[in-house]
Length: 287
Image 1 (cartoon, helix red, strand yellow):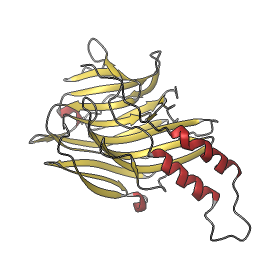
Image 2 (cartoon, helix red, strand yellow; image 1 turned 45 degrees about the vertical axis):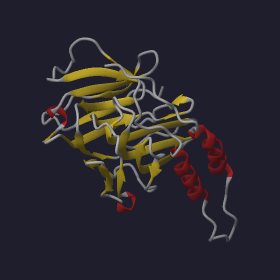
Image 3 (cartoon, one colour; image 1 turned 45 degrees about the horizontal axis):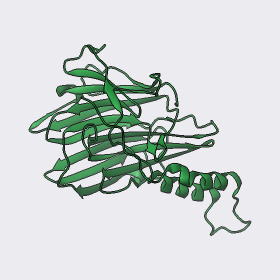
């Protein structure tokens, strides 16, 4: 199965980030002005706004790797992608996907822009629709900003919810479909202020895949460098297709390795655990 190149948004994170950099680099609050928002609060607000102009989840650029999977798991095929790393189940009539993880830390010491999104979703792997939610790390010139978010593509832009997410927070994310209704939920048990539940409607979503993904988000200029998150550990992953509920390995599953344009690995998924419901993704390089 082949996949088309992703469609990039008209707007880019880069459009908002220059002003963001000036703000965090030189803005200070006036003395005694306690009612003024702090420079850090304003920087976080700008970072949150900039996230809305990213593209996450739509149509990975990937090609199948010919031959047998090195993990020799029944139904598993290895593929490569320039923006995804993780696992995708394929089939029809998916109605639930869920997972848990501990939010990774990121090395944001470099003088540049990099991002890493972690999410679960229905669709997007081989369709034009995607219903997804999760967390994101945004590195900008030494600053780290982390958020929870959801998106129903192409109906709306990325909706940023929590802005106090931190490394070590315990996250549970899910997308549950009932007919044309989709309930998207992220729970941050370490900091409930980042948690949310929203119900959205889609009458023409395909429901042909379920995903557990670490992603390098894209903008109008292409795929952004992947933030250095070390390892994302995905656990307790479940999925429902039709009337059958199971784990990642219960259905036809593809293992996705993120590579750069020259074929070097950017993020490497590990083998599924013995229960078939968890795996890790290891960061290798930003570009």
